[in-house]
Length: 306
Image (tube, rainbow, N blue to C red; front, side, top):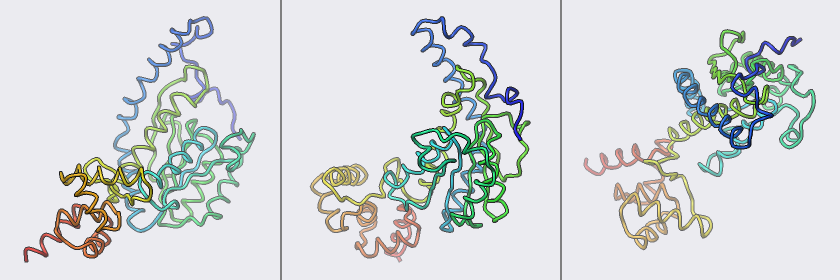
C-alpha cells in the first residue's frame, strides 16, 4: 500500500515557481524554460547506467530478443510512442520494441483511473506477452512507486529477462531488484506533481538514446543516414536516391540506376557500389553481418583482393 506520497521527489513543490499563478505569460514561459534546461545535464550524469541499459538491449537484439516498455500514464504513453516510431524510422520488426501502458490502449487517449494500482496486472502482462530470457523489460515510473510497473519487473525477473528501471526519483529511495537502475532526478516540477513536464522530457530523452543507439548498432544507420530503406513510394524513391547519391558521390541518375539493380534497397545498392559486388552477393554479406554495411563491404573487399 502506497502512503505519504508527499515525500516523493516528483511531488515536492518547486521554490522557483511558487508565484506561478500571478506571473505573466512571459514569466511563466521563462520559468518553464529555465527548469527544462536542467534536464540534459541530469541525464548526462547517468550516462554509465544508460550505457549499461543500452548494452543489454543490444545483446537482446543480437539474439532476436525484444525491448519491452511498461509504464502508466505519461510514462506508459512515452514508452508506446518510442516503440511505435521504431518500425517506420528504421524498417525494424514491429515486435522488436514493444510498449505497454496500464489500462491498455484506451489509456493512451483517456485516463483509466486506478489501472496502475495493481501489481498483479503487470505480472499477468509479462506472462501474456510471453517474456523470455532473451528479452529486456524496461519499467518506466518517474515517481518510482507505480505498482503495475513494479509488478511487471518482478515477474520479468522471475522469467529470466534482463530488467531496467527508469525513474526520476532519487535512487537512494528505490528498493527494487533490477539489472540496471536509471535514476534521473530532475527535481520538483514547475506545476507540482505534473510529471508530464520535466520528468516526461527526461524520459523521452533517455528512451530515444537507448533505442537510437541500439538501432545504429544493428546496422540501421550508415554514417548518420537512415539507410535501412526500401523505396516503395515516390517520396521514398527520392529519399533513397538522395541517400545513395550523397554517400557514393555519384549523380542522381547513377543512384537511380544503382537502386534499380538492387531492387530498390538502399543498403544493397551501397554495398554494390563500394565493393563492386553483385546484388545477390551484397544481400548475402549484409545478412551475414546483420545488416552492417561497413563489415559487409570490408569482407567483400578482402574476398575480391584474395
